[in-house]
Length: 195
Image 1 (tube, rainbow, N blue to C red):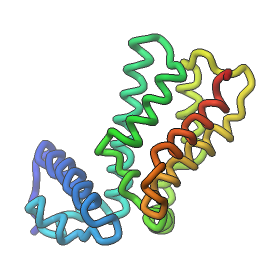
Image 2: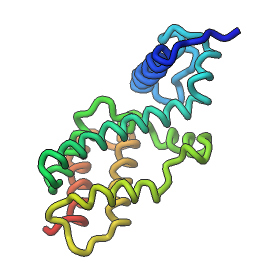
Image 3: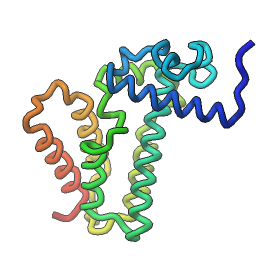
């Protein structure tokens, strides 16, 4: 008979699984992270893992979702404190996400990981373009100094290009990579803000 956990203990285990998975992904990459190694680190049976997550991919999805929730909360706090967001806030958000935030799982996923996730995740887990659009539009309401006419699809595509670049950073020359990523961020900002 499977072990029964209290709701509080279940939440502790779920959180620990996400924390340890991120550590293993940083060390070995998503493809080489094994459920066996993860459950050993957390101190649960391999079969118990599947009472928390359907698959390794669904675990990764939840790590990504928690990260998105965390950065959305940061943006919301800045919005509430200042009453608006400006170009510097958006730049600082991206800079922090790309270079400072050690919890940014995107810094540790490769392009083949994204392909694997898109193939193996059930449809209900896939972040749809319309959801991304809604999130960005919600924040755009609070942006000060934006163009009256901007191309939202171009802003979204610049954001995706930045993420793709980060996901493939090991394929690029390390020298000058920060400069290139900063230029991509500026290109996205130029699309949105009056220059």
